[in-house]
Amino acid sequence: MRVVSLLAPSVAYLLVMFVFPFAYGVLLSLRPKGGGVSLANYVAFFLDPWQARTIWVTASIAVPNTLLTVLLALIVAYAMRGGIWLERTITTMLVLPIALGTVLVAEGINGFYGPKGWLNQALLSLGLAEPTRLTHNYTGVMLALFVQHFPFCFLMLLGYISGIDPALEASARVLGAGPWAVFRRVMWPLIAPGVAIAGALVFVMNFGVFPSAVLVGQPAGATRTIAIAAYQEAFEHYDMSMASAIAVVMGVCQLAGLAVILFLRRRMAGTGVATMGAGKR
Amino acid sequence: MRGRLWRLAVFLFVVGFVLNLAGVVGHVLVSSLARRWFATPLPGALTTEWYAYAWREFQLDQVLGVTLTVAATVTAAALVLGFPAAYLLARHDFRGKGPLLLLFFLPLLVPQMTYGIPLATTLYRYRIGGTVAGVIVANLVPMLPLAIFVLLPFVEQISVSLEWAARVHGATRLGVVRRVIVPLALPGLLTAGLLVLVNTVANFELTFLLSGAGSQTLVVALYYAVFAAGMRPIYSVDAMAVIYMAVVLAVLVLALRLVRPTQMVFRLDRRD
Image (cartoon, rainbow over all chains, first blue to last red; front, side, top):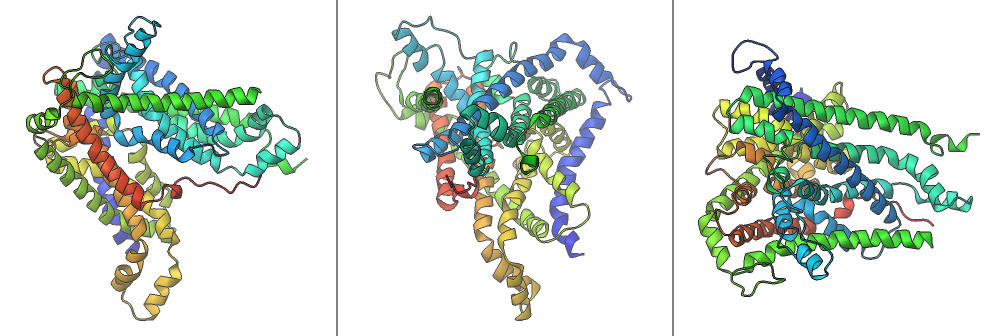
C-alpha cells in the first residue's frame, strides 16, 4: 500500500504527460486531415521528395557527426586516462558548452566562424585562404553539433575509462604488450560497451537536431532536418496530424540507428579477446 | 617517439577545442560591447548601451521573471514528486521495478523534439499550451526522472538502521522522514535541485514548443532574437546572449560550489 502511495504521483505524472501524449500522437498521425483512419500522412510524407529527403539530410548530418564525435572523444579520453597536466581546468573548459546550451553556441559560432569573424580574419591575414563560408550551411551545423556533443561524449567516456582497473593495463605491459596491443586486446573490449552507449546517445541527439540546424544552418535547404519538417507542419501549417506522423518517423529512424549500434556492439563483443576468460586456459 | 607524437597531437586538439570555445564565447562578449564592429580584430569603440537596449527591447525583465518562475517551480515540483519515488526505488525491490525504471529513463533518452511535438499537440488541445503553466508542465517531464536518478544513490547511502533506531525510540513515520531521512538526504536534494535548475534554465526544445507570447524563457527569447537577426542590431542580440550566459554561469558556479563534481566521475586508485 505504501509502495503505491509513494510512487503514484511520479508514475501518474509520466503516464499522463509522457506515455499518453505519445500514444495520442501515434493515433493522431493515423487520422489525417481529410478524415478517416489511414496511413495517408505517412504515404504523403514519403511520396513528397521535399519531405522525404529530410531523412537523408538528417542522416547525412547525424551519422558522420556521431562517428567523428565518438572517435575524437575516445582518443582524448583514452589519452587522459592516466591523468594529465591541468586536467581539472581542461575538463571544466570542455564541460562549458553543455551548460551554455545550443542557442548560445550557435550565436557564437555564427560570429566567430562567420565571414567577418576572427577565424576568417586570421586565415586572411596569414594569407592562407580565401574567406570560406563556414556558417549558414552544412559545415556550420556540423561545427555546432560537434562543439555541443563532444564534451558530453568525452565526459561519458572519461568516466567509463577511468573506471577500468589500471592493474589490467599494467599487467599487460609487464607481459610485454606494446601500447597498441594494450589498447586493442585489453582496453578496447572493456571500453566498447561505453563507446556503444555514448555513440547511441550522441546519434539520437544528433538526429533530433533543431536549433543548430535553423540558426547556423540553412533551414530552407541544405540543412532542413526532419525536426524542422515536423515543426513546420505543427506550427506553420497547423497540421498536427501530419506533424505527429513526422515525429513518429523521426522516432523510428532514431530507433533504427540504436538498433544498428547495438548490432555492431554485439559483433564487436565477439572479437573481444582478453576480458572475461582471462584466467582460464 | 610515436607515443610522444600521439600525445602531442591529442594535446594540440584539446588546445584547439578550448581556443575555439574561447573564440565562440569571446566573440559574443566583445560584440555585445562594441559600438560598431566590422571586419577588424577588435571594435574601434566600446559601449555598454546595448545592454540597456536589449533589456528594453527584448523585455528582459518579463522574460527573466518567467525564466525564474519556471525554473523554481519545476525544481520544487521535481524534488517533491521525485524524492518519495527515489526513496522507494532505493529501499525496495518489487515486481515490475524494471519496466518502471524504463518509464523513468525514457523521457531522458528520447530526444525532446520527438516527444515534444505530440506533447505540445496534447497540451494545446487542452489549452495549456502557450502558457507559463504549459512550459512548467512540459519541462517537468524530463526533469522529474532526472531528479529521481540523481537522488537515488544519495538515498541508498542512508543506513536503514537509522530509520529503525528512530522508530524504536518512538518517532512517528512522519517524524522519521522529517527528522532523519530528509536531513541526511539534504546533499542529494541540493545536488538534484541545482542540476534540475541549470537544466531547466538551459532547456530549449520543450520550452520552445510550449511557449507563446509572454511565456518565453530566456533561451527561447534568445533563439527568436538570433532567428530574426537583422531586425535588431546584432550587438543587442549578443548583449542578450551575454545576459543569458551570466544567468547560466551564476547557477553553475553555485552548483559547483555546493556539489563536488568528483561524485559524478568515479576514478579508481592508480596502483602503478
